[in-house]
Length: 118
Image (cartoon, rainbow, N blue to C red):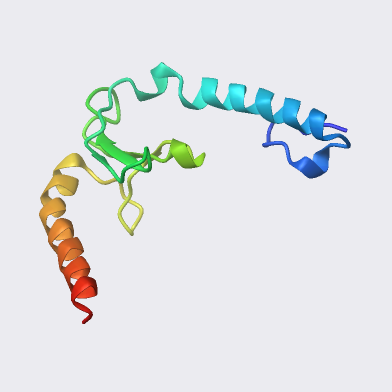
């Protein structure tokens, strides 16, 4: 029995663990080739990250999406995606940049409150 090409193989899809291992290895190779192909991030730069290659954010600097912010969560097997406001509209670099000081201040205040035991 084998997995399908459109979804990540699951162990339950195979009778033998070796078949599953082979299928996962092939899936990972295809995933990496598609998700991390250099052409996918042409025109974008990373300006923010959460460490350990987790969720990166950056503005697109060329092409039809220029000026908008995108998230890169491929380290957690999630595709590139536009950064969006709660109402679903795209976050522009200008809006992201001007909102950053408020977000940073709130983060520091919350951390200080936790550390002080309040």
